[in-house]
Length: 222
Length: 261
Image (cartoon, rainbow over the protein chains, first blue to last red):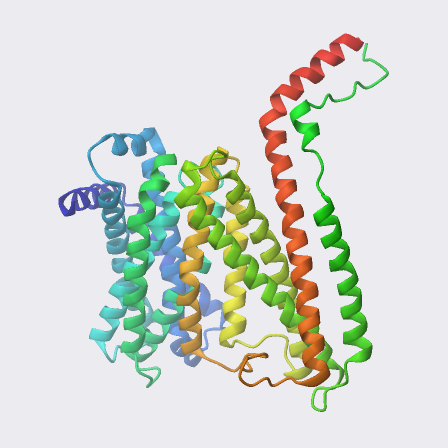
């Protein structure tokens, strides 16, 4: 199963690498969100530095919705979903593979966005280990739940508007916990950050469990 | 030439036999709900005393607290019906459509009652806290629950195969329900300003007349909630019959029209 999951992840990443959609469109959009926030807050340096963790996660959230959408758009064309179902690959492996591919893309995006926060908002990385742990657990959870809803909106004409409506309320706890952990890692608050990483890890586990159960039935109809 | 008289849409025997949206039971329930709501208004506005601290604003209690209880109950009903749909749906004679309708009707009523709770809460908050909204744990959690189930209702409206739609909606309801404790836990850690639960078995903060009125109004809103779910259930069933028999009726109507011409 792990081999199959890696195959799916490799396929998705290869498509992304060749099409360059994440690098050329989604990542610049994430940076653009940071810049637009500077306009919204009248380039108030103190305010932007203080709000940087939240702004980074909002950027991840919106760019993440696009990444999930993209990951399932490539499946819906040319009956690829049916072809995958006809192959011997189990739905669980497909879910894990797709979640891993989305998660890896979002992790790279987060590195870009944190870099953007350092440059544009004068953020200072005080605890890099905490920062990476929060980024890994947060994006892991996001990609797992994102893939469940991505499969749910497969084959639906109104997917572009439906997916954000379904996904954003569900990932709100990730945004909240990720922001609090980043606040500690970027030396903005002195509150414990590892508790939030623990909570992100629990969410990741729950979403992975739900996904392994739900992905098969969702694909049956796709 | 177009005929001057419009032919009547024929109704199939299957449809006409199940056309009613009420029964003796729901009519009685409806009247009970109506009378108890009127009584709640009288009790809440006239009989209940003013609060020593918040004055007349305390009367929001009889509206705000029962509606959120009904909303919670409706969402729990939606989650249970969705779980049963996924678990037992395939083995049932009606392919779980009954359970799907219960889930849909409950979620609709839950969303309406949550909206009512948010609106009345904002009005009450403006008077007691001085602001419409506080970013405390319980309010944030309620807002998240509201938008989650709005998404669920959007999913139910998708123009896809009914069985596909039902299955996806049931999974969405369950994922939202599984997620609620995570939302609750995270926002609880984030901040908590809201007052403690209004009613508890061990020590009630509200006593005497106010306690009785709150209990009465809760019963009134629960009856209203059940009545609304029963009616929405029937309307959903009629919509399904209309969709199932739509083509059959359209052909019959076309034939009738041709006969008139």
